[in-house]
Length: 431
RNA sequence: GGGGAGGUGGCUGAGUGGCCGAAAGCACCCGCCUGCUAAGCGGGUAGGGGGUGUAAAGCUCCCUCGAGGGUUCGAAUCCCUCCCUUCCCGCCA
Image (cartoon, rainbow, N blue to C red; front, side, top):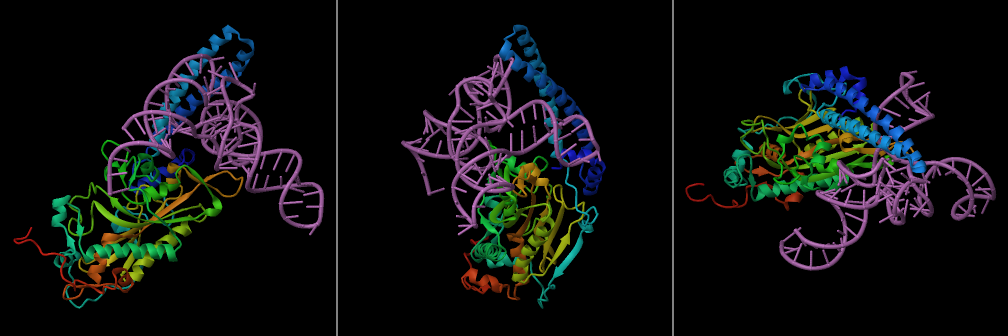
C-alpha cells in the first residue's frame, strides 16, 4: 500500500499513476475520510488527556462528584474513538485498493502491445522441418495427458507421465541447484496454504480474491504463487539492516482460478489451475532494490541461457504491469511449434508497497528507527511453459526430444525423450 | 478432537487494579577507567499514531504487554470470545 501521508502530500501523482495503470484509485474519498478520522481522533485524544489527569486526581481525593464527571468523559471519549475507529477501518480498506506508483523508466502504455523489448538472447532455432506443438509431441509420446486430467479434475489440468514427469522434476532440481549454489539464494519449502493476512501482505487481497482458490470453511487460501508465503516469511518483523538483502528460492505448486481468462490459451500445457514454479524472492533496502531487481532478473535469465532457449525480456508498460508492481519484466521463451513467445517468468520490484501491507521493516543500523523494506520477486522459472519451450525447441523430425545438456545428469543420463517404450498403451478404442 | 499450561521490549524474564510502556539480566550504543584485551564504573536503547513546526529537529498528547470486546473513574493485571505456542491423551502419512 501507499502511505497515507504520501497520498496526502501527492494526491495528483497517485491519481495520475493509477490512471496510467488503468486502475481506479479512491484518492478523493481517502482524503475526505482522512480529515474526518483525524478530527474525531483529535477530539477523543483531548478528552482522554483530561480524563487521564483527573483520574489520577481522583485516586487521591476520592471525590464522588469528580467520579461522575469522569464517567461521562469516558463515555464521550469512547464514542468519539469508536467513530474514529470505524472511519479509519473504512480508510484502511480503501488504502489497500490504491495501486502502486511506478518507476520513471516504465514505458507508458495501455496493453501488452505497448510493452517494450528490453533485450533478446539467442535466435529462433531453424529446425529444418515443420515444428510441432508441445501438446502434439507430448500426447504422441505419452508424456502429457490432458484428456485423462479433464476426467480426473477438469479443464486446465494436466498429467505429466513417465519421462514428462521426470523432466519436470529434473528442471526443478536443476533450477534450485543453480540458484542456491551459484546465485546465493537460500532454499525454502513453504506452506501451500496461507491465511488471509498473508494474501493481503502480497496484495493478492482484497482486490484479487477471485483469482485464488479459497478453502471452504477456513481462513486458508491455496497459494497463487510461492511469492505469497515466502514474502510473508518476515511479516511483522524488524530485520537487521546488515542482513539484507535476504534471498530466497522456493519450489512450490501454484494454484489459480484463471477467472477472466476463459477461452485464452486453452490448448496445451500453458494456462493451468495448478502449475509448478521455482520462485525467487528478495527482501532488501530502498537503496539497493532496483539493482537487486535487475540482478534477480538476470538470475532467472541465466536458467534460460543454460537451457539454450531463445528468449526476450519485455519491459512491461504501465497498463500491463499490474496493481502492485513498481517495475516489471516478463521473460518470454520462444516456442517454435506454437510460433510465439511464452511468458516463463515475471520479475517485479514493489518498493515498500508489499512491505507496508505485510509490515516488514528493517533497522538500517543499530539504534536507528526502522524503515519499510523493499520486496522483489520473480519466477526462476515457471515449469510448464519452460517444458513447452524445451520440447518444441529440442524436438526432432521423428517426434522425439533431445534433452538439453545441463539436464542430462538430472534425468539419470537420459539423452532422448521418447526413445524408450511408451509409459502405457492407450486403452482399446481410445478413452 | 479432549484436557492442562502459557503468549510482556532485539532476546530471557518479573510484574494480579493507580507508584507500570513495564523490574532484572543478556545483547547493543556512548562516555569514563585502563600497557592491550578482559573486567569494572556511569549513562542510553520498544513500536505506532495525532497536534504543532516549510521541513528536519524539538515540544506535546494518545494508543500498544497475542487479537477483539467487556467491567472500572482507572486494566499487562479481572471477565468473555478468538488466534497462536507448548505439554499429556486420542487419531494419523
